[in-house]
Length: 581
Picture 1 (cartoon, rainbow, N blue to C red):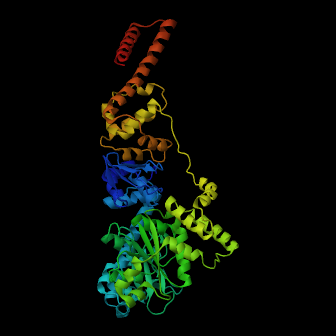
Picture 2 (cartoon, rainbow, N blue to C red):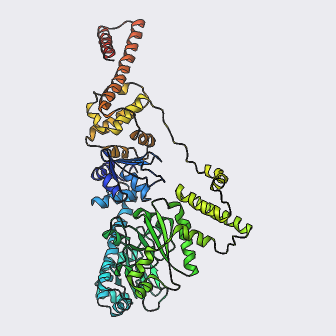
């Protein structure tokens, strides 16, 4: 990212970020000695190997080798780009990014302007609903109360843009910006109009509560019944969960998330105190949706219509979710009566019965076999073979050994293999293909140990002897060490996470990350002595090289008085150092 975001800004951002707090808002960390631990979010494991260091502002996993600073965590955990992760941290700390690159600065300013425009338009819609009878009658008819209107910022867009324009005093400047960003349009006749005109407006908020788009529901039979904003630089449908902001405001770590299809369903269930309700904006569930849901809870419950279309939709969701299911992450399903949605069902049967549906949601394994056995005759050998061929590849996408083996054993009994060991033996070759890639190891050398000690303990820089002459010797890695040492001296309070950020996207970035979590097998009390000893060995090499040069010169043409004094001084220093050893 060189030339785009200044390093001083990233360093300041990281200095304000507590990586333990950042990760603890997303995962449940437990104190373990001076560090914190949890099960790794980047691979399936039975015992915690994911460690977070407050001192180093650095995380690492002993199981899959995932590691890095706060920026790396956001990139990997929330599937953000580097710039998006910087934006996320800058929002948390209320800082404005001073982009150096004109292109990125323009995009950043454009996004900030879009956020502002969306907020202004949301305010207009909210104001408009106050004096629009047709909108209030519709909401009253649907049973949505004033509290929900306020919680979800519900509004209304006038049928006529000119009326909207006059009543709400839209400035010429605002109208111009709305046109530039295609938030309002111009008809073939040259008339300006809002694509949502005549619709109830449901503002869509991101995880910070910023308005990023709108959904509109027709109330006068204009098709389509529901309409969403076009995607922009701040709105991507496949990455957005409606209602999640409202849930997270109440519960930082919800015990489950109930996923329904529409805006009204979310609002009505929330009004009935059915908590944890969200929606994927009426679109098909994406992998990104599933990842976001499991990042926020351990149990995701999908609610569908009980007809064939609803069951098929549930099956498509299940297939996409299988790779993300684990011993901790559970998927369940609710199938409502045919031709009913959650809004209709809860009004008909009340909160308690609907809550019972949630409590008795169909487990993933039960739904898996119930659906896949449709039209299968288990008395037919051909059907058994077809079932095995269809089910096994799906089951094998599950990362959890426990769940995967259980489902395979259930399948084995269905197709008539009663000996579990026989079935596991049959699958042995397939299982071997799941082996992880071999880990990358680097050779242990004195210079790498020295760099590792400094990367893990930047405060060692202050005890290093003067380094003026060190660059005169050719030792592999010495220049890198001197550069890191200077960074530490220039930034006295720097930590490991910040130090790594100086080398992002450089050729040595990966090896420095490895050295930052390297077990150098030196007890904490001896780290300072080992650091100084390694440095003194380098100084000795400088003296030895100079000594060899002077001896060679003496043989060729003799030495001056000053050179003789120098070689005497070098011999004395080397002798002194050898005695220490």
